[in-house]
Amino acid sequence: MDDETVFQVLVNDEEQYSLWPADKEVPAGWRRDGMKGSREECMRHVDEVWTDMRPRSLRERLAAE
Image (tube, rainbow, N blue to C red; front, side, top):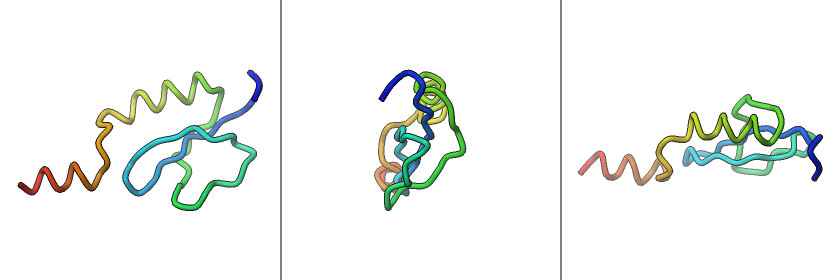
């Protein structure tokens, strides 16, 4: 992949994020977050929105204790 690759941000049911080339089909278990851009732009977005790295199921289980 080169510097001109356009990426999209994906998120799964556990609220974990990933970058994926925008021209590729979204893999099973993932959905588009809505952000598209350069790798750097997408990484900045992920840094802003993914503030708790724990999977959603773990956060929910700990909150219930």
